[in-house]
Length: 151
Image 1 (cartoon, one colour):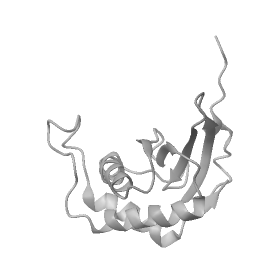
Image 2: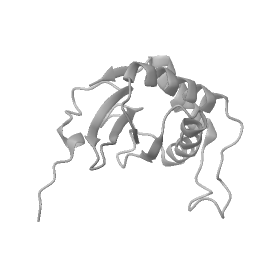
Image 3: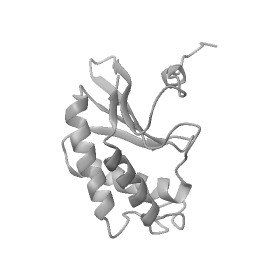
């Protein structure tokens, strides 16, 4: 069995201050595509956590808004199991300062949202577990803290 190293396990979670945006990984595919994985951290690791309904709602909203802007070619947007943020995987390269502005614009849309996309039983595997109010709270916390960019 091959031993794989998960790069996020090398991040010292005791030495970072959330919220932040971090380049978690960058690889070149066999065909030469640059694939970038970003760590979008909303809460302080091992101190604060996003409740699941808020995280689920944030996932639905940001998965939509990040793609709607058309600026980036999104591969995947996924919540972290530790409930502190999300991973965004996309085709790169990515200028992190430019992305931060784009992400903040998407978070402003979250803060202004009146509805949640994809919340019908036929569209979502846990359609009853959402909290727009709490998702907005986490979006505003991220925006008001003016997240740091980590490399």
